[in-house]
Length: 245
Image: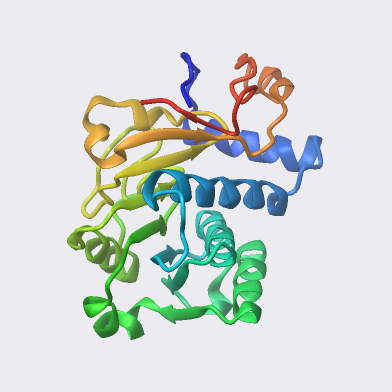
């Protein structure tokens, strides 16, 4: 699971990748989200759950946007593989955007335990956990996390358990590498499609931990579109997940 040198994207460029995927290539967000979440669950299984999730307790911390949706897909797969999954969300179901709300509804039909972070605060303080999955805030972060999201980040960092972040640790600016207060300190980060510029900044390493890259089915030809103008080759030719550092 090794990769050579790859270009890095800013947040604005990643927004353009998402736009091209949906508008030009007709690859929908729900498809990208499924790929992201499945690969996140796979990395959790092989790297942080000793190859077998059965009987392990996993807390999935989910925000209401695309990053949270990917974490919810991860929750589904880990539950299917035998983990005891507890989902903690920053807001109520009605506040989730459309596709993440769809993922949350699936988990409710499966009977997973889902709680609002504010309501679960007391119980979470005593819960024995094997892994925390960070899907609180994605690359759309703008400024320091606030409110419930900030509280959930602080709770995560206070636990002496492995933390797996999706795309970028919540609280770290994916473009600049700025580390806001608070910010997740991850054991490992699974970023998506192409590395984000901020994850490679010298000061970010302590927050990012081990850095992996996951295939979410972006066609290599997309990156050569005029609005991006880059070439990435075929980084996933041998594996859907590659280790970058």
